[in-house]
Length: 98
Image (cartoon, rainbow, N blue to C red; front, side, top):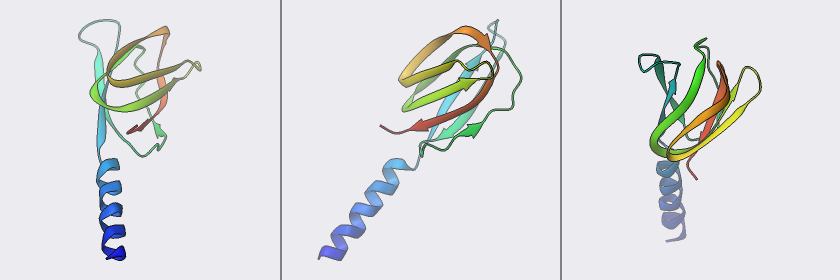
């Protein structure tokens, strides 16, 4: 019985962490944007797109931190959009499911 409970608990833990967060990086105009998927396992994902980012949005699903090439960090949670103080290309991002 105990092994079955632990196995079920392990599966619940894995399924809770097994999703990606869709994040959109917005440029200076409505036509400038790109989207990426970030796993919710706190992995730091390198971002290689050189576009200057003015804001970052997500339709929901995670707690994410992004760091720009000039060092500014931006945090978004669930359904959110945040504007950068200093527009800049993004360097990396990381998401969790908390």
